[in-house]
Every structure is written in structure tokens, then in C-alpha cells.
Image 1 (cartoon, rainbow, N blue to C red):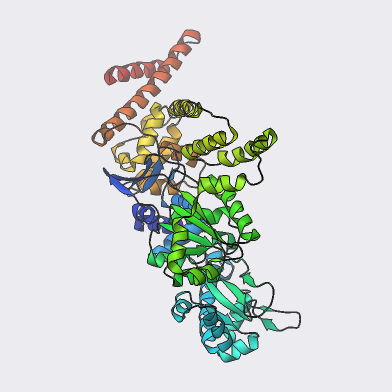
Image 2: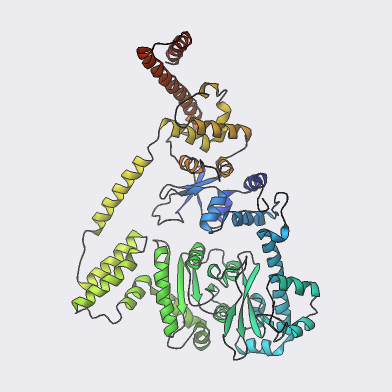
Length: 579
């Protein structure tokens, strides 16, 4: 119970939050009628099938069927867990989460995170101040060509060679030192001496999208290995999920046309200094799936620019293979191949900004880079080599979700090895037709599915139900769920669809409710109430008919009691009146 967030607070958050604003800040929405539409961010969407309803505070994709409220969107889009999505919404509204009674703040993840945000920000400020007090560190950055304005823009700092020197020079309070130790930002070695993992290093703060310091990269100013280190992972810092410099890019470009990915911190800083202000780093040469998703959430075109050595070239190919499953008709990648033993920092100093811009303009497209690399060492006059090529290329090509790009690359491969496949489009169209038929069959509406679906999508319909007594002993499948939803809607008259689904998030029926919440009933809005009432009557009539059939069957075999005869007479009368 110590970790539980009260339902009233979650409901209040949903009342305060406009799902349209949250989604529009991440994906550009276009008004269409009373709803909003865009291309679905969760699948390769050729026509806008992702719909967001302000009225229902609910989103739904007619292509891949993903759906939910604003909490579900953050979970699916930002890859957060439930509690993290609540934290995100709370932060947006400047609220603190009121946990239920008997919780211990020191043991609660939320409070641990807030403490870490505070401490990492405090030590970042200390590092920045220390840099200005340490001539050797400051001179190192100036020697590397980094300007004072960039030092300030990226909040660059320095950690002294010993903690004692750092502690005394900056007049750090003992209370802060204790907090830093308790949160493992600094440590005690075997000799019982306090040390900072970044001691003797230039520090590069890593910020989240809100500008909060969550961790650091560190670069030694002496010949000490490793040259670069990163913060250890904490509740707020996961290296595989962070992009260095993205916060700074977003300060200048809310929706950058493209993002240029480089390897190092200084690469990012030097290119930014040279007016190329859409540069980020993946905190090393090995990019992760989570980082690729973050990049594509912020731009449609990612350009990779790794160092011009074997490690950089290998990293570029490895990155291509990891990125392929996230390519779509809108989302694509390019590659800049630097000269031997050059990196972005050195090449821009030699060539200048204009020449580097030309490299960006002439970056290799996905297809050119793919075949340039996969054809290395291949003898196209050899049948064995052709077989080897197709065996290695096809699995990579098939991992691309975009049908158009996948077919295009297959055609290039076919021409390369001398095999032309003219039936791909016909096959593709046939598969699409069959898939649509299966979906239509699966989503075929029934009486109860339509009734429950209408209620979930329009909770205010509950006000039309005067009594539920007639359904008390009903045997119709789905009636218990309908009555349960009806009861909740009547108890919470202000609920919209998003809030209703949130209420049942952890219940056994949530999957049924989510499915029914997305049904397209093909009913014009003005007639929804009448259809709902007609369905109620139809369900009641169907219930009566079932009871009637049971009693008639019983009469033929066993006969009926006086009460049962009166009941069948009453049923007959009700059915006649309903005609």
C-alpha cells in the first residue's frame, strides 16, 4: 500500500489534462470535424488513421487498433510505466503525488527521484562554478576551441582531482555531502576516503526533456583511461534511454527537420558552436532501440555521422541494422562518411561550417548506404556470392515495416543479383485484401457489444436508463458487464471515456472494455440516444423470448406451475405490447 496512488488523484489529473494538447505536443494533429487526426506513430501509416477525441479524452488508430486515454498514450509513446506516466502528468501540472496513508517517503520511488533531481542539479551547479575556479580545466576547453558561450549553454563543469579540494574550495555543507553519499553520487573508497567518480574530469550534464540534470558524462584532462565515463544508472538516469544535447536542440527547434547523431560530447558542442544546432549524441558508439524511438519521436530524418575509423564504420553499420525496424514512409535515415581518422570535431575545424553543411546535404541515403556496405567483398559473377548476398540482405530488408521501402530494396537486390520479381505488388495487394477481410470478420458487432460499446463511448447515456430491474435475472451474455459499467457511469456522471477506462485499468474486464471502446458503430451523433434506447428494448425483448422458450419447452415435458403459467401469460402480453 505504501506505493499506491489514490484513484481520486488520478481522476483529477485526467480532468486537468487535455489529451489533444499532450499528443499534439509530440505529434502534429490536424482538426477533422470534432476530432483530430494524424499518421499513427505506432505503425507504418500511409493515410492518417490515428484519431484523438477531445470529447472522450481518448485516442484510437483504425489501422493497428491501438487505443486508450492520455496515460496509455504516455505508456506506449514515451515507453513509461504506469507510475512514471502519472509522474509525467503531475509534473506538467505542477502537482505532487499524494500517496495513501502509511507510506514512507524515503522508501518511495517518487520521492527518491525528486531527491535525485535536486542533488544532481546541485552538484552540476558546483561543477560549473568549479570550472571557473580551475584554470587548467578552463584552459583545456578553450584550447579545444570551445567558446565561453557554449560552456554556459551546455552547463559544462569540472570536478577537482580530490574531493577534499572540491569540498573546501566550494564551501560545501556537510549536510549536502551526506545526501550525496546516501544517494551514491559520491562514494567512499577502501581507505575510507570520499571520492567523486568524475574527479579530475570535465563534466557534461545530461538533461531530460524538461531540462532537469539526470546524469553526467566526464572527460579526463590528463592521459587517464578510460578517456570518457558516464554516470552509473539510477532511478532517473538510464544510459540506453538518454540522448545528449536533445534538450538544447529543442530549445531552438521545437520540431527539428532532422537530427544529426555523433559520438562524442565535444562533437555535439563544436558543431553547435558552428551554427549546426541540431546535433545530439547517443552517449557512445552503440545506439539502442530506445534511443532510436526517441530520435524518431522528435524528427522524421536522422543523419548518423560517426568517426572515420574502423570503429566508427562498424558502428554505422550496426546502427543501420538496429534502425531498420523503425523505418517508415515518413521516417528515414542517412549517413555521413567522414575521411579516415577524422571526427566531427576535427573536420569542422579544418573545413568550416559551410563545407560540413555540404556533407550533410550529400549524406548517403538508406538504400545507398545499405548496398554500399552489404556489397563489400561480393563477387557478382559468382553464384555462391550471389546466394550469400541474398541470404544476408533479405532478412535485413524484411525487418523494415514499410511495404514500399521493403519492396523497393528487394527490387534493387533483385536487379543486383539478376533476378527480377514482377509479382511483389500483386502479392502485397492480395495480402492486404485478405487482412482487411479478417479484421472485418473479427470486429462484427453484436447486440450486446454495440450496447456496451455505445455506453463506454458515451457514458452520459446512463442517464437514459430509468431502471435495471428487468435485467436482474437476465441470462444474456454481457448483461453483468453492461450493468457494472452502467452503475459506474451513474456514480460518476462527469466521466468521459478516458476516465471510465482508467477506472477499470486493473480489472478483469479491462480488455473487453478497451476493445468495445474502439468499435465503429456507423451511427450519426444525433441518433445515438435513440439507437441506445432501441437496443435496450431489444435486449429486454430478447431476454423475454429466451424465458418464453424455456417455459414452453418445460410445459411440453413437465407441465407448468400456476405461477409459471401466469409468468408466461405476462411475457406474452409484454412481447405483444413491444411490437
